[in-house]
Length: 408
Ligand code: BGC
Image (cartoon, rainbow, N blue to C red; front, side):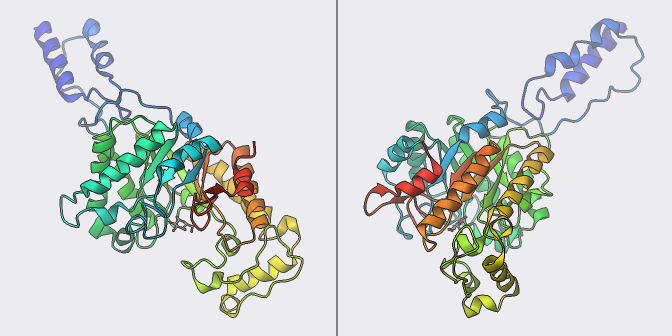
């Protein structure tokens, strides 16, 4: 009788217990071992088995990398922006060329981030198939990066329809990620998946967290190895990480944030932001030698008017175009890293070409130094377009800006 009960108990345990922990490590043998020698025959109720999460279809990881090590490895990076996230590559003037990878590697970068507008290359109806030629183009970019000893982060960029109508697009978003995971699941772990660039609009924090968790789970059913990178809602700034809830049970994740403070300096005269950012000649750091009068469109906006009053008057230490807001961001970053127990990556920072070059250099080196002082890896926005460190026409680096990033 004892023997029969023992066999029944073991069978029940084996039947119910998933062999995988949320990290996908095999745990089964330890779950049944202690039962055998001490069993006394009173199993009137079935033994309770703690349900596992995620479900047992999770793919086991062969080499689940350490997230802090994965973040450290990102080191110094650059965004290959304005290419694959344009509606069609080339439409924004930038086409990724083979020679860029060698140049980037030789300059001392460790990583390229590749913004990609997958939504423009996937069917709008289920099963949302991704265009084969486009996928091959991404294969090529990944191969090039890896063969030049560069880590490569691919993301989902400019999925504008998702920001407008999250509920209409969440299934498509997940399905696109499933297709990406399926295609690259056997690629080395120098490839990283960044779920979504700068979530915003109607994709509010709660909606984004839910979608993020579902997407992570969907990817993990296919690929339990590659590191996933996530940012917070409200345009991916540090404040988006303040209340972020990371997917439960997931330990191969990096948290990202972007830094463009102050926008009135980094985005002065940029065509894709509002007229309030149209005042040119804003230097970094402030205050300017000669006071600046904001353009009328800027003066009409209260916070912009106040910003310029302070910019013209406040000393370096407290100037809104000074070290203070940037230091504050990094103070928050340090706290967020601890609170979330999530390594950080500064995935974008940069100043647009309409700012004067010396100010761009000042700002870029200051931000880079702050990040490195806290061991936060980074990727500059971007390689060869409006914020560019490489001049594609002259086929040469903007040496001073490059030195602001890679001083040695
Ligand atoms: C956007 C780019 C923009 C950059 C700086 C990126 O996240 O996708 O279009 O140039 O931020 O604003």
